Length: 490
Image 1 (cartoon, rainbow, N blue to C red):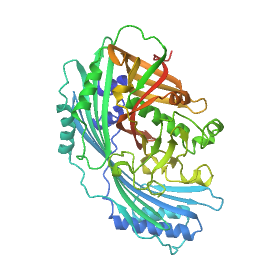
Image 2: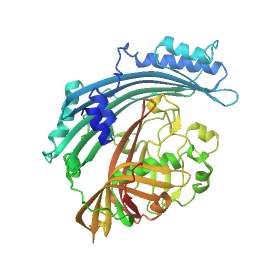
Image 3: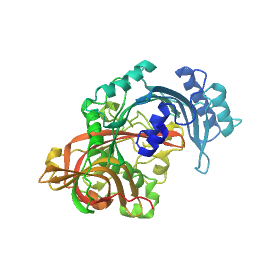
Image 4: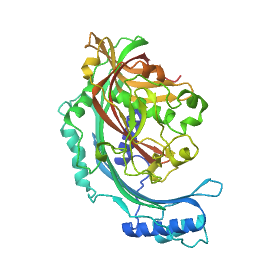
């Protein structure tokens, strides 16, 4: 079997990035391009574009420019490789006399390319006088690491794993960097930011009988590539997770006391927030009726904030200095002690009266269709040690994905492992391939305790080939829910 077949069969979360980095994941995206212009040149082109759009009578003219470089280094049992790709774009957005949004996108970040995009919206307009204010620039000058450094970062993950042994049939390490420079220009606003997002991932696979057991651990942050690292303890936890021997007895389906590991909590949050707590979700009558502002939706132990500035933008893999509509980053409270107090909104949602404030208009890859989307979600920690949350029941570990039906509030989470507990101690029985099935509201209402320990997870997926970044800081939770053997399609 080749890498594509192996990772496709395993369903590893980082499979697409590993395949791309190792050169077997589809066509090569890298292409020779002219060097990007100086920052002051790009800013001048955007100023001219906004001035011409304002002169044409359009409301809220906005110009966004991007140059993004994606780099990934990976090694596995078959070898190592580095892949690089670059994307450039300019997005011009205006509102016409009817308030409808009109956009023009070009991949030509040059004076001629921007001028052609403006002409497509306003052919004959001459520049008007527009006050853009003082430029605000949040960009460091740290260089991109060269190939040897990246491969050394990836190899260092493997060498920190002292638990690695011959039962591991496949292992891989990945270092992925998305380095984006974004300009946002509108009347009264002249912004520039550089966002360097880094992910490190370790994947381990071992056989348990006739089925593979996959374990992954990752670390993601916003900052230079060498400023943080995936720790030795976390990497060895992934190896031990893959090596765990599953109990051969059938799992007894039913409602149990459960302790949700941070990865499971993060997976639930990642599925629930876009489905229920955005202005786009409020278009569904069932959601609007059930989750109006002030409604009780969870236990009083639950407080959830979306904060792109968390950790001074260092820990927030999904953070930013301003969103893709030019709104400055700020914390937004979504759930306060179990009650809905806010929603994630873009400017269209605010204009429609579905939310009081804006600040989360985000575009996949900074140039896709704008949508209200979370940045760095933080579930507030509690005061108890995570070991104190354990009694009789199961610890659920290794989330493999979650789905929320916004109409019915039904939640299904695929779980890699459930460790049985008796009187707060592990019995040694470990079950694999399970599902947590619940009404989301009922599950959150049953949360009895929240740990003081937290873990942070970075998520990167793609929409129409463009990446979406977000991150979640989650503690351990104790609750009640129905756990069953995973259902497979007929």
